[in-house]
Image 1: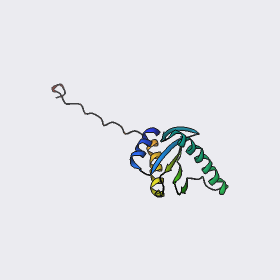
Image 2: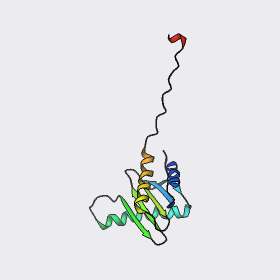
Image 3: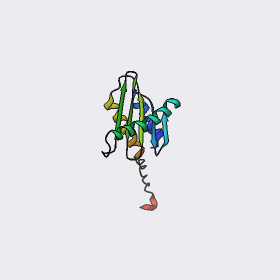
Image 4: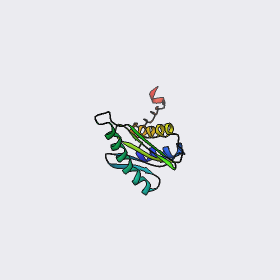
Length: 127
């Protein structure tokens, strides 16, 4: 599944997410919501991951950042290849938002399901 498809699925699953983006190597692969908000989210994701890494120099790579404010939250999740960032409604359920973002990243990395093989009908010539 591509990033746009995964974000569309995310929008259907999570009423808490107002805007989101998936980024790989500095390139936005997909976005959901107001483009100006998404642009701010992408910049914030990079800054938040950097600030969190700076708090523990030499520590393990930062996997997630949660910022919960009175008027909503910002959540960042780092996957193996990509980063997902989302803005939420006020008083989000952090565990659920993080789960949904991780699921979004996993869906992008999944291989498409192979189409079932069609069986050939037996004909008189086969008998």
